[in-house]
Image (tube, rainbow, N blue to C red; front, side):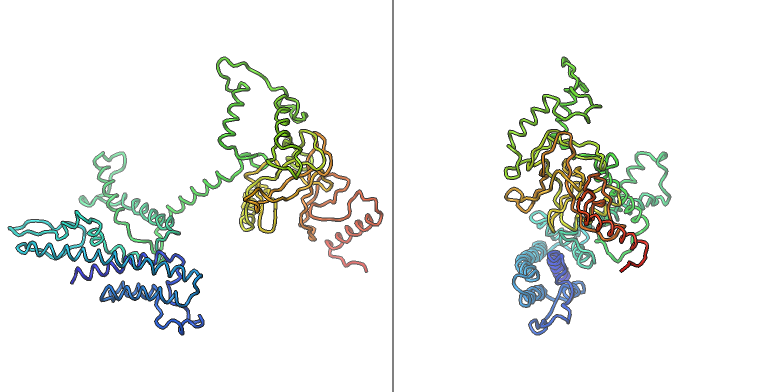
Length: 540
């Protein structure tokens, strides 16, 4: 009878645990609220995991079939009330299908345990047996000619997992009794919490006294190798007992809080190392250097004599580094060859025949408008693709979160909105196109086209020239920021153009306009803005 009750408890606990793990959203964890219309009319016998768990923990199931009936009733109720395509129906169908498999396996396991126990007693009627002990230790011993035998000795050889489940059956009960259950979604958090508990227990055990001597451990400099081995063994035995699931209602100890603080500090440093700017400014970082680019840079270093190989002739670059800003980029034979090859590959670089846009014909230099800027190393005709805005495709929530992160870390962000749902973020990973500055009278315009199939939704942003561009001329386009009525939120413009609007996010008549009425309207608009800032009433 004792063996039958234990097998029933283990089987019910194991099946219930498997079913609850397949419900990570806790759809059937609690009773259906009374506010759900029509539920009591359709479902005559409502049941949920909380009722089944209460019966299992209190041993209220007298047979395995009654437990299976309640579990099947839960699935049938969900399939009866919810639509076929809903998530409730899908999870209930999955639970119903897997319940049949688990029922068969549990029945086979219970039959094997009972048969092994009955067979052992029938074969050895002359032997005397002590009551069953399920602590995982063998009961085989000899005292005064009386043999104490393990009834599952044969089953351990043929099916060792079955006996192990019988001996460690309390584990499943502790799992379903916990308020924090391991699922596929929270597996890292579950084992992470256990690791923190074990680290705290190991720290506490290392300061505990010897169990046989009653004294404390000696200092590290005074311990022998035997004492160190005994200490490690004692800590391992103490930590191995920490297997119970984490309870959310438990308050962490001060040692556990200390371990969590250390882990958070390590995590923050790793994140800072991955996203922080190497030079203090995102404009100065450039693109992420991949492995192939590193190999190319190493080859260039060897070529120019920084890592000169034996027998190689030292050569100097044609244009000195200090005079690169005065060069058009076409002074060297290598640069002219690269531009020629790029033209032959991409044709006339028109927007109709655009392919992969290369950065060979442009370069990043210091700009008189703001910080860095993009300059043309060769002349461009009207209507050709000058550059492309390259970066990471992100959604609106990710763009808002990154904008806040960049502001907190004082990193200037480079984000280009493609449409209402897609943003290109070139702050940490991007091309030369992100350095193009704003101009109220630009020489280029940003055009958005569909991406290459099959990813047409990943649209591309091309920088197309509006007029002929000379070599060494800075490439600019109009950012077209939304208009801002608040004077405090307006961004001053430093383009220096004759048609400059004064602000990047305002659209008053241009300074260079020849229309007298337009200039008067602009002067009046500026005066009204000043009066509003001073809080004075406007004249009618």
